[in-house]
Each structure stands twice: as structure tokens, then as C-alpha cells.
Image (cartoon, rainbow, N blue to C red; front, side):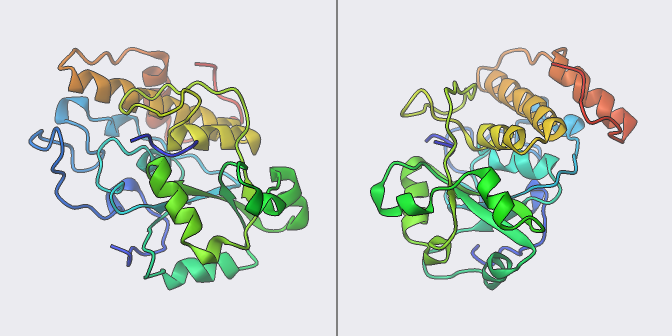
Length: 258
């Protein structure tokens, strides 16, 4: 499953991660001095490696309120790299009217990323190609339900405005590289890993590679800071994003392999 393992009035405008609503983080690591942008401990800051990539698809994150304030949340990485990403804090009783308007817009072809493991919504299961063919002029939108597996299923079941949307399950033999939370199943991916696989599916290799490199840096920096270990900044991912930051532009469809 795609969820990370462990204010409903948020505006609809495309955001970067620092626009996501926050409250004081009170769990383990609450006393660590953190970068106000990436929320990692200051020595582990990854802001110098943030690169934005335009894509022909969009991601909308419907985020459980408890997930929004966790520094280990990976949904914010998508917002960092993909400028059209939109984030909503989910509420069962208060639905953002801008979200409802966007879902009804003919400009978008939204699909909910969710497992096809229950018979009651089997008729809604679709493929990316089928959604594209049904609405060829609309921008494909991947809706990610952001939270623990239990929270994500609650969002899915308690959000009637999602009930008419096609469901796109992510199938494959995956192994998560996420080091910060323990998955209940070995095949479960964190949110950003799901986004990377969806970008590959949508034939967005540049976006997938940049987001993958950014996730690698986030993953290794955060894990090292937790263990108070030396943070190594000489990986191919570091070199790739540092170079792209310096160039300030992306002119090639395919980037050098990591």
C-alpha cells in the first residue's frame, strides 16, 4: 500500500511542502532543531537538493490531519519536486469546496490510488490507459490518501465525494527503501515511492528520477540524523540534484542514470 507506514481550510492552490499546515511536533525528536522548510534536523537539511520538474500529470494528496505534522511524512517530497501538487487536510465533516469543484472540473481526470482488494468497489477498478482514453483532453490526476493504512482506508470509506471516481491499484513486486517507519507488509510502499512508480507508469521518467533521487537523499539524511551518524553527501543522487540545481533548468527528457 502506498501510505506512509506507521486545518480542513487548507487552500487548493498548488503548494510546496512549507505551505502545509503544521502544529508543534511532540513525538520522538520533538526537541531537535529543525529546518523550517524540509523539517529535518538542521545538519540533515535537504533544501539544497530541491529541484522542481514539470509533468503532464498531477498529484493531489488527501492527508489525514495526524500525518501532516510528522517530519517523517514523505508526501511533502512530492510537493517539493512537482509544482502542480495539491494538498488537502482531510476532515470527515468539513469538505473543502475547492476540492469538490476541482473534482467536478472537466479539466481533470482524477483517479484514486487504492488496492483492489474488496468486491464492493470492484466495478470501479480501472487502468491508467482506460482513464486517459475516457478523457483524453483532461489532465490525469493521481489522488493519494495520505496516512497510515488504517487512516487511508477510513478516508476512502468516509469520503462520499470519492465514490464515483475510478480506482487505480498499483500492482507489482515492490520492495520499499523507506527506513523511517516499519511497514506491516514488506511490499508496502511509502507515499513518495508510490508517486515514483506512478510517474513511471505515466511515462514521466524525468519526474520519476528526480523525485527518486530526492527521496534517496531524504531517506539517508533522516536515518543518519536519527542515529547521530555522519551524513554522506557524495552519492549519485546528491550529485545529480546538485547539478540540476546549478543548471536551473531541465532540457533533456531522460537524465543520466543514478
